[in-house]
Image (cartoon, rainbow, N blue to C red; front, top):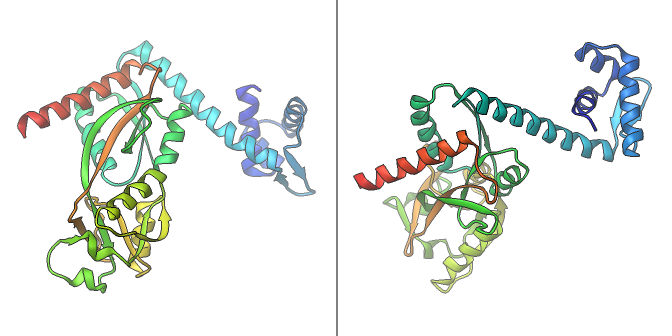
Amino acid sequence: MELRTLRYFTVVARELNITRAAEKLNMSQPPLSNQIKALEEELGVQLFIRGKRHLELTEEGALLLRRAVQMQELADKTRQELASLREGMTGTIYLSMVEGRAPFLAAQWIAGFREEFPLVRYNLWNGSSDDVLDRLRKGLADLAVIAAPYDTEHLEGFPVGQEPWAAMLHPDHPLAKEPGDTIPLSSLVGEPLIVPSRKSRIESIRRWFGEIGAEPQILCEMSNYMDAAALSSQGVGVSIFPQTVGVSNGLVVSKVVTQPARQAEYILVWNKGQAPTGLTREFIHYVQDCLEERQTKA
């Protein structure tokens, strides 16, 4: 499969119309149709169901579309990395991160790094830990900020920050109306809970409740912090997630969980065995310098 052919296929798959796809590609319709047929023959599968007026992707076609997009992204990233090696400290840093405090940490790093390297560009992507790590494994991200724990067998990394675990409550919930900005973990026993979907997180929460001789009543598992906040804002349940700066919007009340308290730790990671490029390596060193400076001032 050539990248050019995959690009043709991607446009056709998105347009689902050969005529419109040919116009977008600035080519005539017959050669484009021939390219798609040749691709199907090469792969030995049917990629489209052909109707009179439009096309429909087959299951094989849908799979190829996902892979084709990833391969084109990786090709673009590789070209930019090669250009950065040729031209000096330029290029693009691809950083994927989980929700919570991670975007705020990344913003601080980028603000400082830009002062030293103003020509560097950034491609930021946000999602669940599983999605973030998937992009890192596939080479679609240079670095990732995830929540601990992490796979030390396949990843290199170091801690970059932490924040307390908190409960997000509907404003009319009795716990939200109690004075103070903290609540004991025991007050959440018996409450329908909305928790992060990551397996290691759920196990940690179960151990946390186990320390006070209780079992969490988990109603819903969510990968998205804002989706959990939305459910809490409707009174569906109490969300337990790391407390994040700037999320409180009046729709939910956030209170740090104590007795015992827990901290969520964020880790900057990259693939073990793959030496970071010059630009990425420089960014890692910058983050490490920032952490050392912060510890010195503390």
